[in-house]
Image 1 (cartoon, helix red, strand yellow):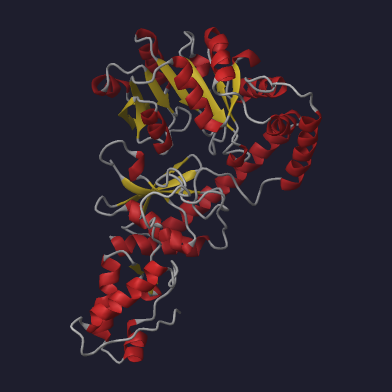
Image 2 (cartoon, rainbow, N blue to C red):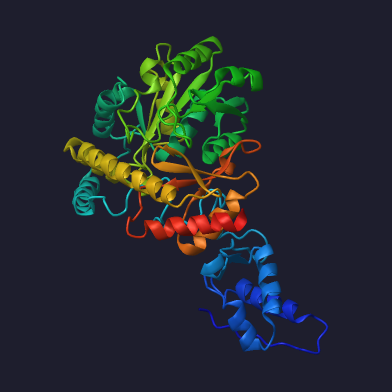
Length: 469
Protein backbone atom coordinates (compact mmCIF):
# COMPACT_ATOMS: atom_id res chain seq x y z
CA UNK A 1 0.00 0.00 0.00
CA UNK A 2 1.38 3.42 -1.03
CA UNK A 3 1.68 6.07 1.72
CA UNK A 4 0.63 9.49 0.41
CA UNK A 5 1.60 12.85 1.83
CA UNK A 6 -1.10 15.33 0.85
CA UNK A 7 -1.44 18.80 2.30
CA UNK A 8 -4.92 20.35 2.17
CA UNK A 9 -5.76 24.06 2.22
CA UNK A 10 -9.26 24.10 3.72
CA UNK A 11 -9.63 27.83 3.10
CA UNK A 12 -8.54 27.67 -0.53
CA UNK A 13 -10.76 28.15 -3.59
CA UNK A 14 -9.98 24.65 -4.96
CA UNK A 15 -12.28 21.97 -3.56
CA UNK A 16 -10.82 19.35 -1.24
CA UNK A 17 -11.45 16.59 -3.80
CA UNK A 18 -9.73 18.75 -6.43
CA UNK A 19 -6.69 19.21 -4.17
CA UNK A 20 -6.48 15.45 -3.51
CA UNK A 21 -6.81 14.74 -7.25
CA UNK A 22 -4.12 17.30 -8.13
CA UNK A 23 -1.64 16.03 -5.53
CA UNK A 24 -1.97 12.41 -6.64
CA UNK A 25 -1.83 13.36 -10.33
CA UNK A 26 1.36 15.37 -9.76
CA UNK A 27 2.91 12.44 -7.90
CA UNK A 28 2.11 10.13 -10.81
CA UNK A 29 3.41 12.52 -13.48
CA UNK A 30 6.64 13.14 -11.55
CA UNK A 31 7.28 9.42 -11.15
CA UNK A 32 6.92 9.52 -7.37
CA UNK A 33 4.06 7.02 -7.76
CA UNK A 34 5.10 4.21 -10.08
CA UNK A 35 2.79 2.38 -12.46
CA UNK A 36 1.02 -0.43 -10.65
CA UNK A 37 1.33 1.17 -7.20
CA UNK A 38 -1.79 0.61 -5.08
CA UNK A 39 -3.44 3.73 -3.74
CA UNK A 40 -4.92 3.80 -0.23
CA UNK A 41 -8.59 2.83 0.07
CA UNK A 42 -11.17 5.60 0.24
CA UNK A 43 -11.65 4.96 3.95
CA UNK A 44 -7.94 4.93 4.81
CA UNK A 45 -7.14 8.13 2.92
CA UNK A 46 -10.29 9.86 4.22
CA UNK A 47 -9.28 9.02 7.80
CA UNK A 48 -5.68 10.16 7.15
CA UNK A 49 -6.80 13.53 5.73
CA UNK A 50 -9.85 14.10 7.94
CA UNK A 51 -12.30 14.31 5.04
CA UNK A 52 -15.35 12.30 3.99
CA UNK A 53 -15.10 9.08 1.99
CA UNK A 54 -17.16 10.75 -0.75
CA UNK A 55 -14.50 13.46 -1.14
CA UNK A 56 -11.79 10.87 -1.71
CA UNK A 57 -14.05 8.85 -3.98
CA UNK A 58 -14.67 11.89 -6.20
CA UNK A 59 -10.92 12.47 -6.51
CA UNK A 60 -10.25 8.82 -7.39
CA UNK A 61 -13.06 8.71 -9.95
CA UNK A 62 -11.60 11.76 -11.67
CA UNK A 63 -8.15 10.12 -11.76
CA UNK A 64 -9.71 7.00 -13.30
CA UNK A 65 -11.62 9.06 -15.89
CA UNK A 66 -8.38 10.81 -16.88
CA UNK A 67 -6.60 7.40 -17.10
CA UNK A 68 -4.14 8.15 -14.31
CA UNK A 69 -5.51 5.27 -12.24
CA UNK A 70 -7.34 1.97 -12.68
CA UNK A 71 -10.31 0.99 -10.54
CA UNK A 72 -10.21 -2.75 -9.89
CA UNK A 73 -13.14 -3.17 -7.52
CA UNK A 74 -12.23 -5.33 -4.54
CA UNK A 75 -8.61 -5.33 -5.71
CA UNK A 76 -8.41 -1.60 -5.04
CA UNK A 77 -7.24 1.34 -7.12
CA UNK A 78 -3.81 1.32 -8.80
CA UNK A 79 -1.68 3.76 -10.75
CA UNK A 80 -2.08 3.20 -14.48
CA UNK A 81 0.84 2.57 -16.78
CA UNK A 82 1.34 5.64 -18.94
CA UNK A 83 3.57 6.29 -21.96
CA UNK A 84 6.59 8.44 -21.26
CA UNK A 85 6.25 11.88 -22.82
CA UNK A 86 9.29 13.79 -23.99
CA UNK A 87 9.63 17.15 -22.27
CA UNK A 88 10.13 19.04 -25.53
CA UNK A 89 8.85 16.92 -28.40
CA UNK A 90 10.87 14.18 -30.02
CA UNK A 91 14.10 13.10 -28.35
CA UNK A 92 17.01 11.51 -30.26
CA UNK A 93 17.09 8.86 -27.52
CA UNK A 94 13.44 7.91 -28.13
CA UNK A 95 13.04 4.34 -29.49
CA UNK A 96 11.50 3.88 -32.96
CA UNK A 97 7.96 2.69 -33.64
CA UNK A 98 6.64 3.16 -30.08
CA UNK A 99 3.16 2.01 -31.16
CA UNK A 100 4.56 -1.36 -32.24
CA UNK A 101 7.34 -2.04 -29.72
CA UNK A 102 6.96 -1.25 -26.04
CA UNK A 103 10.38 -1.92 -24.61
CA UNK A 104 13.44 -3.15 -26.50
CA UNK A 105 15.93 -5.52 -24.84
CA UNK A 106 13.53 -6.46 -22.03
CA UNK A 107 12.77 -10.02 -20.91
CA UNK A 108 9.46 -11.35 -22.31
CA UNK A 109 6.34 -10.84 -20.22
CA UNK A 110 3.26 -13.00 -19.81
CA UNK A 111 1.04 -12.92 -22.92
CA UNK A 112 3.75 -11.29 -25.05
CA UNK A 113 3.60 -12.18 -28.75
CA UNK A 114 6.38 -12.72 -31.26
CA UNK A 115 9.03 -14.24 -28.99
CA UNK A 116 9.82 -17.89 -28.28
CA UNK A 117 9.94 -19.49 -24.84
CA UNK A 118 12.56 -18.01 -22.53
CA UNK A 119 12.51 -20.92 -20.08
CA UNK A 120 12.63 -23.85 -22.52
CA UNK A 121 15.44 -22.85 -24.87
CA UNK A 122 18.63 -24.98 -24.68
CA UNK A 123 20.89 -22.09 -23.65
CA UNK A 124 23.91 -24.19 -22.62
CA UNK A 125 23.99 -25.99 -25.96
CA UNK A 126 23.41 -22.77 -27.86
CA UNK A 127 26.18 -21.00 -25.92
CA UNK A 128 28.70 -23.69 -26.86
CA UNK A 129 27.65 -23.50 -30.51
CA UNK A 130 27.88 -19.71 -30.52
CA UNK A 131 31.37 -19.81 -29.00
CA UNK A 132 32.58 -22.18 -31.71
CA UNK A 133 30.95 -20.04 -34.39
CA UNK A 134 32.58 -16.89 -33.07
CA UNK A 135 36.02 -18.54 -33.13
CA UNK A 136 35.42 -19.77 -36.67
CA UNK A 137 34.39 -16.30 -37.84
CA UNK A 138 37.37 -14.68 -36.11
CA UNK A 139 39.80 -17.08 -37.81
CA UNK A 140 38.26 -16.66 -41.27
CA UNK A 141 40.26 -14.95 -44.04
CA UNK A 142 40.01 -11.16 -44.15
CA UNK A 143 37.72 -10.84 -47.14
CA UNK A 144 34.24 -9.78 -48.22
CA UNK A 145 31.73 -12.56 -47.44
CA UNK A 146 29.05 -13.68 -49.86
CA UNK A 147 26.32 -10.99 -49.64
CA UNK A 148 23.68 -13.66 -50.21
CA UNK A 149 24.69 -15.44 -47.00
CA UNK A 150 27.01 -18.25 -46.01
CA UNK A 151 26.76 -21.14 -48.51
CA UNK A 152 26.50 -23.79 -45.76
CA UNK A 153 23.56 -22.03 -44.12
CA UNK A 154 21.75 -21.54 -47.41
CA UNK A 155 22.21 -25.25 -48.08
CA UNK A 156 20.77 -26.17 -44.66
CA UNK A 157 17.77 -23.86 -45.08
CA UNK A 158 17.04 -25.22 -48.55
CA UNK A 159 17.09 -28.80 -47.25
CA UNK A 160 14.88 -27.84 -44.28
CA UNK A 161 12.31 -26.11 -46.50
CA UNK A 162 12.10 -29.13 -48.76
CA UNK A 163 11.27 -31.43 -45.84
CA UNK A 164 9.15 -29.20 -43.60
CA UNK A 165 7.44 -26.80 -46.00
CA UNK A 166 7.26 -28.82 -49.22
CA UNK A 167 9.27 -26.09 -50.96
CA UNK A 168 11.91 -27.39 -53.36
CA UNK A 169 14.55 -24.76 -53.99
CA UNK A 170 18.28 -24.51 -54.56
CA UNK A 171 20.70 -22.52 -52.38
CA UNK A 172 21.13 -20.11 -55.31
CA UNK A 173 17.52 -18.96 -54.75
CA UNK A 174 18.13 -18.30 -51.04
CA UNK A 175 19.19 -15.02 -49.47
CA UNK A 176 20.03 -14.69 -45.78
CA UNK A 177 18.65 -11.43 -44.44
CA UNK A 178 18.42 -9.27 -41.34
CA UNK A 179 15.14 -10.80 -40.18
CA UNK A 180 11.74 -10.35 -41.82
CA UNK A 181 12.29 -6.61 -42.25
CA UNK A 182 15.52 -7.18 -44.18
CA UNK A 183 13.85 -9.74 -46.44
CA UNK A 184 10.86 -7.47 -47.14
CA UNK A 185 13.17 -4.56 -47.90
CA UNK A 186 15.20 -6.67 -50.34
CA UNK A 187 12.00 -7.83 -52.05
CA UNK A 188 10.56 -4.32 -52.43
CA UNK A 189 13.83 -2.89 -53.76
CA UNK A 190 14.59 -5.71 -56.17
CA UNK A 191 11.04 -5.90 -57.55
CA UNK A 192 10.99 -2.10 -58.01
CA UNK A 193 7.44 -1.77 -56.70
CA UNK A 194 7.97 1.42 -54.70
CA UNK A 195 5.12 3.86 -55.19
CA UNK A 196 2.64 1.21 -56.41
CA UNK A 197 -0.44 -0.39 -54.82
CA UNK A 198 -0.11 -3.36 -52.45
CA UNK A 199 -2.62 -5.74 -50.90
CA UNK A 200 -2.24 -6.52 -47.21
CA UNK A 201 -4.48 -8.82 -45.20
CA UNK A 202 -6.97 -6.95 -43.01
CA UNK A 203 -6.25 -7.49 -40.16
CA UNK A 204 -2.55 -7.82 -40.84
CA UNK A 205 0.85 -7.24 -39.23
CA UNK A 206 1.19 -3.49 -38.47
CA UNK A 207 4.95 -3.49 -39.11
CA UNK A 208 4.40 -4.77 -42.65
CA UNK A 209 1.84 -2.02 -43.30
CA UNK A 210 4.24 0.60 -41.97
CA UNK A 211 7.14 -0.78 -44.02
CA UNK A 212 5.15 -0.75 -47.25
CA UNK A 213 4.04 2.80 -46.53
CA UNK A 214 7.64 3.92 -45.90
CA UNK A 215 8.50 2.45 -49.32
CA UNK A 216 5.94 4.81 -50.83
CA UNK A 217 3.39 2.10 -51.53
CA UNK A 218 -0.36 2.63 -51.23
CA UNK A 219 -1.52 -0.11 -48.86
CA UNK A 220 -4.99 -1.56 -49.38
CA UNK A 221 -6.40 -3.63 -46.53
CA UNK A 222 -8.09 -6.68 -48.03
CA UNK A 223 -10.45 -8.56 -45.68
CA UNK A 224 -9.91 -12.17 -44.71
CA UNK A 225 -12.49 -14.83 -43.97
CA UNK A 226 -12.34 -18.48 -42.97
CA UNK A 227 -10.48 -19.30 -46.20
CA UNK A 228 -7.93 -16.52 -45.93
CA UNK A 229 -7.43 -13.47 -48.17
CA UNK A 230 -10.54 -12.55 -50.19
CA UNK A 231 -9.15 -12.06 -53.71
CA UNK A 232 -12.45 -10.79 -55.14
CA UNK A 233 -12.52 -8.08 -52.46
CA UNK A 234 -8.93 -7.16 -53.31
CA UNK A 235 -9.83 -6.67 -56.97
CA UNK A 236 -12.65 -4.33 -55.98
CA UNK A 237 -10.60 -2.36 -53.45
CA UNK A 238 -7.27 -2.03 -55.29
CA UNK A 239 -7.43 -3.38 -58.88
CA UNK A 240 -4.04 -1.90 -59.79
CA UNK A 241 -2.10 -3.68 -57.03
CA UNK A 242 1.23 -5.22 -58.05
CA UNK A 243 2.09 -6.85 -54.71
CA UNK A 244 0.21 -8.95 -52.15
CA UNK A 245 1.71 -9.74 -48.74
CA UNK A 246 0.00 -12.75 -47.17
CA UNK A 247 0.37 -15.20 -44.27
CA UNK A 248 -1.21 -18.29 -45.86
CA UNK A 249 0.14 -20.90 -43.43
CA UNK A 250 -1.45 -19.34 -40.34
CA UNK A 251 -3.01 -15.96 -40.89
CA UNK A 252 -1.58 -13.31 -38.59
CA UNK A 253 -3.30 -12.65 -36.26
CA UNK A 254 -6.53 -14.71 -36.65
CA UNK A 255 -4.89 -18.05 -37.39
CA UNK A 256 -6.86 -19.53 -40.32
CA UNK A 257 -5.01 -21.42 -43.07
CA UNK A 258 -5.55 -20.20 -46.63
CA UNK A 259 -7.61 -22.75 -48.53
CA UNK A 260 -6.29 -24.47 -51.65
CA UNK A 261 -8.93 -22.74 -53.78
CA UNK A 262 -7.83 -19.31 -52.52
CA UNK A 263 -4.17 -20.19 -53.07
CA UNK A 264 -4.84 -21.14 -56.67
CA UNK A 265 -6.93 -18.00 -57.16
CA UNK A 266 -4.20 -15.78 -55.72
CA UNK A 267 -1.54 -17.37 -57.92
CA UNK A 268 -3.81 -16.85 -60.93
CA UNK A 269 -4.23 -13.18 -60.02
CA UNK A 270 -0.46 -12.71 -59.84
CA UNK A 271 0.09 -14.36 -63.24
CA UNK A 272 -2.67 -12.41 -65.03
CA UNK A 273 -1.68 -9.06 -63.54
CA UNK A 274 2.11 -9.44 -63.69
CA UNK A 275 2.04 -9.05 -59.92
CA UNK A 276 4.05 -10.53 -57.06
CA UNK A 277 3.16 -12.39 -53.89
CA UNK A 278 5.24 -12.15 -50.72
CA UNK A 279 4.57 -15.16 -48.51
CA UNK A 280 5.27 -14.29 -44.89
CA UNK A 281 5.76 -17.76 -43.40
CA UNK A 282 6.19 -16.24 -39.96
CA UNK A 283 5.57 -19.45 -37.98
CA UNK A 284 6.92 -21.96 -40.49
CA UNK A 285 5.98 -25.43 -39.36
CA UNK A 286 5.00 -24.37 -35.82
CA UNK A 287 1.44 -25.59 -36.33
CA UNK A 288 0.25 -26.61 -32.87
CA UNK A 289 -2.58 -28.82 -34.11
CA UNK A 290 -2.09 -31.25 -36.97
CA UNK A 291 0.51 -30.85 -39.68
CA UNK A 292 1.36 -27.48 -41.18
CA UNK A 293 0.10 -26.90 -44.74
CA UNK A 294 2.83 -26.73 -47.42
CA UNK A 295 4.18 -23.32 -48.31
CA UNK A 296 2.28 -21.32 -50.93
CA UNK A 297 5.52 -21.08 -52.89
CA UNK A 298 5.47 -24.86 -53.34
CA UNK A 299 2.48 -24.42 -55.71
CA UNK A 300 4.05 -21.61 -57.73
CA UNK A 301 4.64 -22.68 -61.35
CA UNK A 302 5.04 -19.19 -62.82
CA UNK A 303 7.70 -17.61 -60.61
CA UNK A 304 5.46 -15.10 -58.85
CA UNK A 305 5.94 -16.01 -55.15
CA UNK A 306 8.72 -14.81 -52.84
CA UNK A 307 8.90 -16.81 -49.61
CA UNK A 308 10.09 -15.19 -46.35
CA UNK A 309 10.94 -17.06 -43.16
CA UNK A 310 12.86 -16.20 -40.01
CA UNK A 311 14.41 -17.75 -36.91
CA UNK A 312 12.78 -15.14 -34.64
CA UNK A 313 9.91 -17.34 -33.42
CA UNK A 314 11.99 -20.55 -33.25
CA UNK A 315 15.39 -19.49 -31.86
CA UNK A 316 15.38 -15.77 -30.96
CA UNK A 317 14.45 -12.40 -32.51
CA UNK A 318 17.78 -11.13 -31.15
CA UNK A 319 19.53 -13.02 -33.96
CA UNK A 320 17.96 -10.68 -36.51
CA UNK A 321 18.19 -13.55 -38.98
CA UNK A 322 15.76 -14.40 -41.73
CA UNK A 323 15.76 -15.69 -45.29
CA UNK A 324 14.15 -14.98 -48.63
CA UNK A 325 13.52 -17.55 -51.37
CA UNK A 326 13.02 -16.07 -54.84
CA UNK A 327 12.01 -17.68 -58.16
CA UNK A 328 15.06 -18.97 -60.11
CA UNK A 329 14.72 -16.33 -62.84
CA UNK A 330 15.13 -13.53 -60.26
CA UNK A 331 18.11 -14.97 -58.38
CA UNK A 332 20.85 -13.12 -60.27
CA UNK A 333 19.13 -9.73 -60.03
CA UNK A 334 18.39 -10.20 -56.33
CA UNK A 335 22.04 -11.13 -55.81
CA UNK A 336 23.13 -7.82 -57.32
CA UNK A 337 20.72 -5.86 -55.13
CA UNK A 338 21.81 -7.75 -52.02
CA UNK A 339 25.49 -7.09 -52.78
CA UNK A 340 24.90 -3.36 -53.21
CA UNK A 341 22.19 -2.55 -50.68
CA UNK A 342 21.25 -5.37 -48.28
CA UNK A 343 24.10 -7.87 -47.67
CA UNK A 344 23.64 -10.76 -45.25
CA UNK A 345 24.34 -10.17 -41.55
CA UNK A 346 27.34 -11.31 -39.46
CA UNK A 347 29.01 -14.58 -40.41
CA UNK A 348 29.28 -15.65 -36.75
CA UNK A 349 25.53 -15.86 -36.19
CA UNK A 350 25.13 -17.64 -39.52
CA UNK A 351 27.74 -20.24 -38.54
CA UNK A 352 25.91 -20.85 -35.25
CA UNK A 353 22.54 -21.43 -36.90
CA UNK A 354 24.17 -23.65 -39.52
CA UNK A 355 25.61 -25.97 -36.86
CA UNK A 356 22.34 -25.91 -34.87
CA UNK A 357 20.51 -27.11 -37.96
CA UNK A 358 23.13 -29.51 -39.31
CA UNK A 359 23.46 -31.42 -36.02
CA UNK A 360 19.70 -31.95 -35.80
CA UNK A 361 19.21 -29.69 -32.78
CA UNK A 362 16.87 -27.34 -34.64
CA UNK A 363 14.27 -29.95 -35.61
CA UNK A 364 14.38 -31.55 -32.15
CA UNK A 365 13.91 -28.13 -30.58
CA UNK A 366 10.91 -27.40 -32.83
CA UNK A 367 9.25 -30.69 -31.90
CA UNK A 368 9.67 -29.94 -28.17
CA UNK A 369 8.34 -26.39 -28.57
CA UNK A 370 5.28 -27.52 -30.51
CA UNK A 371 4.33 -29.85 -27.66
CA UNK A 372 5.05 -27.23 -24.99
CA UNK A 373 3.18 -24.42 -26.74
CA UNK A 374 0.15 -26.64 -27.37
CA UNK A 375 -0.02 -27.43 -23.64
CA UNK A 376 0.31 -23.76 -22.70
CA UNK A 377 -2.27 -22.69 -25.24
CA UNK A 378 -4.76 -25.25 -23.92
CA UNK A 379 -4.06 -24.10 -20.36
CA UNK A 380 -4.74 -20.47 -21.26
CA UNK A 381 -7.99 -21.27 -23.07
CA UNK A 382 -9.11 -23.43 -20.15
CA UNK A 383 -8.22 -20.75 -17.60
CA UNK A 384 -10.16 -18.03 -19.44
CA UNK A 385 -13.19 -20.28 -19.91
CA UNK A 386 -13.17 -21.23 -16.22
CA UNK A 387 -13.62 -17.54 -15.42
CA UNK A 388 -16.47 -16.74 -17.86
CA UNK A 389 -16.97 -13.07 -18.58
CA UNK A 390 -19.00 -11.02 -21.03
CA UNK A 391 -16.15 -8.52 -21.04
CA UNK A 392 -13.46 -10.87 -22.44
CA UNK A 393 -14.33 -13.96 -24.49
CA UNK A 394 -12.09 -16.55 -26.13
CA UNK A 395 -12.56 -16.21 -29.88
CA UNK A 396 -9.88 -18.50 -31.32
CA UNK A 397 -6.61 -20.31 -30.64
CA UNK A 398 -4.51 -18.88 -33.47
CA UNK A 399 -0.92 -19.84 -34.12
CA UNK A 400 0.96 -19.34 -30.86
CA UNK A 401 -1.66 -16.96 -29.48
CA UNK A 402 -5.19 -16.91 -28.16
CA UNK A 403 -7.52 -14.26 -29.57
CA UNK A 404 -9.82 -12.86 -26.89
CA UNK A 405 -12.71 -10.67 -28.08
CA UNK A 406 -13.81 -7.46 -26.36
CA UNK A 407 -16.92 -5.34 -26.80
CA UNK A 408 -16.65 -2.78 -29.61
CA UNK A 409 -17.23 0.02 -27.11
CA UNK A 410 -14.04 -0.89 -25.20
CA UNK A 411 -10.54 0.38 -26.05
CA UNK A 412 -8.28 -2.65 -26.40
CA UNK A 413 -5.31 -0.29 -26.72
CA UNK A 414 -6.15 1.21 -23.33
CA UNK A 415 -6.51 -2.19 -21.66
CA UNK A 416 -3.19 -3.39 -23.11
CA UNK A 417 -1.47 -0.24 -21.86
CA UNK A 418 -2.93 -0.64 -18.38
CA UNK A 419 -1.91 -4.30 -18.27
CA UNK A 420 1.76 -3.25 -18.52
CA UNK A 421 1.58 -1.92 -14.99
CA UNK A 422 1.03 -5.51 -13.81
CA UNK A 423 3.78 -7.16 -15.86
CA UNK A 424 1.42 -8.37 -18.59
CA UNK A 425 1.90 -7.75 -22.31
CA UNK A 426 -1.28 -8.52 -24.29
CA UNK A 427 -1.35 -6.99 -27.77
CA UNK A 428 -4.42 -4.98 -28.84
CA UNK A 429 -6.12 -6.33 -31.95
CA UNK A 430 -7.59 -3.11 -33.35
CA UNK A 431 -4.24 -1.63 -34.62
CA UNK A 432 -3.89 -4.68 -36.89
CA UNK A 433 -6.80 -3.37 -39.00
CA UNK A 434 -6.12 -0.95 -41.84
CA UNK A 435 -9.35 1.00 -41.42
CA UNK A 436 -12.06 0.80 -38.80
CA UNK A 437 -11.37 -2.25 -36.62
CA UNK A 438 -13.69 -5.11 -37.39
CA UNK A 439 -13.14 -6.49 -33.90
CA UNK A 440 -11.74 -5.18 -30.63
CA UNK A 441 -9.74 -7.75 -28.73
CA UNK A 442 -6.51 -8.86 -27.13
CA UNK A 443 -3.89 -11.15 -28.67
CA UNK A 444 -2.44 -13.31 -25.91
CA UNK A 445 0.87 -15.04 -26.61
CA UNK A 446 1.29 -18.48 -25.05
CA UNK A 447 5.04 -19.06 -25.38
CA UNK A 448 6.09 -17.55 -22.04
CA UNK A 449 3.19 -18.50 -19.76
CA UNK A 450 3.81 -19.85 -16.27
CA UNK A 451 0.98 -22.17 -15.26
CA UNK A 452 1.60 -21.30 -11.59
CA UNK A 453 0.76 -17.63 -12.13
CA UNK A 454 -1.65 -18.10 -15.04
CA UNK A 455 -4.90 -17.98 -12.99
CA UNK A 456 -3.86 -14.73 -11.33
CA UNK A 457 -2.81 -13.20 -14.65
CA UNK A 458 -6.10 -14.20 -16.29
CA UNK A 459 -8.02 -12.72 -13.36
CA UNK A 460 -6.12 -9.48 -13.74
CA UNK A 461 -6.95 -9.27 -17.44
CA UNK A 462 -10.62 -9.93 -16.73
CA UNK A 463 -10.63 -7.23 -14.05
CA UNK A 464 -9.10 -4.73 -16.47
CA UNK A 465 -11.65 -5.64 -19.14
CA UNK A 466 -14.58 -5.38 -16.72
CA UNK A 467 -13.33 -2.01 -15.46
CA UNK A 468 -13.56 -0.58 -18.98
CA UNK A 469 -16.72 -2.45 -20.07
